[in-house]
Image (cartoon, rainbow, N blue to C red; front, side):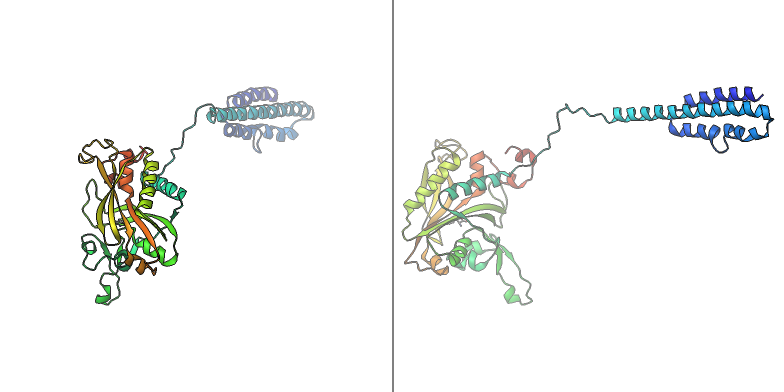
Length: 350
Ligand code: PHE
């Protein structure tokens, strides 16, 4: 009886082990036969109740079966583990020859590019790059620049005034503002630095006006200032011609026209030959062949005085170039608002 039982048991267990799909199943089968209450364990435990001769035979066979199954279990365990490893390998296989995905890198905004180019050119001819505050006092933005109290630029139409909450209504009246130009930095710099000096001041400026293709409420300027014992319009012309040629990377004709600014005397407007039609006349330059690029002039004696310098000792020229304008000319952009739109279809072209 016992012999047949063991044989049946052996085949049954062997079959089950072979069919096991995973370690959990295999473990359950192990428990069923060789666990504490497993069938074979129980047989082994009951051997002591058999007759002496039976005991030896059954005991030997049951032990052989036990060893046989243990071996089967460990073989199957290895087999299943190998299978799992192979699956993981296949799942996690990487083709290292596939070309990688290029991370998309950002780039400088066209206005930053133009600003850097401008700084590079002026620095190479001895100008330092200086910055000034965007929130300015009425004194530096207007008074120190010889701009009279009743000048229209002071009007709320042009200037963003900031109200200071002091509780005193009179004191709260117009004191701080968003600078309308970079010229206040002329005075700020000359107060702290004695001539001779050569600086440019790139920076953001603000004007309270309706936007259209050529007007924005905030845009950028580059102020220029050169002061020495003897500085003339000829020096200005040489510097600015050099700048434009290097900026546009081609010969540029310039034209100086008389103009008016309270902080320069004489004052002028500088035009360059139209980059679109090269001076022949087109819609960009209103058929004149010239494009208005900047305001400039010789530093007014009152500006020197406001900065604490004696106008008898010093001469200088100053200019203010619209950075947006420069960029528009260089890249043939017809709407200033594009710079501030955040539109990647536009920005990615630079
Ligand atoms: N600040 C003037 C403007 O904003 C430009 C300018 C600068 C003119 C320096 C003369 C000298 O229009």
